[in-house]
Image (cartoon, rainbow, N blue to C red; front, side, top):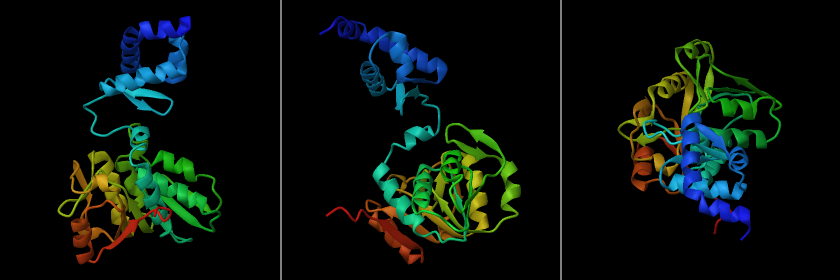
Length: 271
């Protein structure tokens, strides 16, 4: 073991305490920055962050960590993006296949909608597709792609969700026609419908739902049978639901009984 490695091991508890304080004070910190600050390798810092996440002191994110705030009602976008990646990828692909060139569609700021957006760009050039979204990451993904026009409602930016929210967006939805709205959710029950962790997000999603001729839920199995804080779409307002193969069969049956199109996104490469 070299001298640098010994120093990294001996002072690990003290270094981790200092890292936790830095992340708390700044809200976030990057691996490269911390490695330079403590004169240790990036591998050592990643081990520190793993240890701190295990005890709930920080939340690891791509390239670093963010502060752990137990009072925050939802995870930061970059953290939620790491959850159920396989399911979101499959749901995104199946939902993107429902989009027809020439339509105007609405996408919320969910991580599943981002997966959908990536499949839209992967389909190649479009002739005329208009996408209305309050998701900044989604707008960035689609902006500049041939044949896709992106519209963002006015409002205030929420960094946790990388979204635009607030009543200023109502004016846009009063002036446009949307064929399909694709909605992610923090919770989904038959009784409560689609719900979100904050009323700010739910408010702009209600506008999307109210404008669209078809409302399509894009929700992985972890959101089913749980109700989040604010409902934005009742079950009877849904046209279709795109989900993964671990979604509860009893809920799938009840949705079909109500005439809702249920599409289970499956991985065709699996045996």
